Length: 109
Image (cartoon, rainbow, N blue to C red; front, side):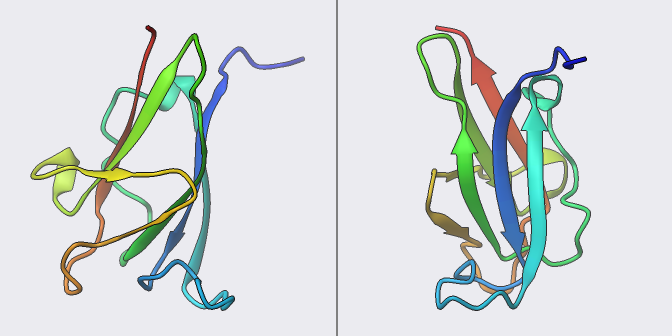
């Protein structure tokens, strides 16, 4: 039986900036999958103490739904949002900071 909670995004988090760009898997903290029920609300944690990079593998964008991922260095999605783009590594803006929270916002056209 299929769940009625469609996939919206998946991304990998890293404890180092660069998201393993040199082919190294060092700092790989795992993959997150976001379903529709998890969108449009702040996710207050990545369940990791240090997140320096986020690589967005896939995000829903079609003629029915458009989604955007935002990452924050403040708790509860506070402060300035950083857009996380598909197939690019989003690094923390300040090397001493860590991403703490995130939100995947999805809107129907």
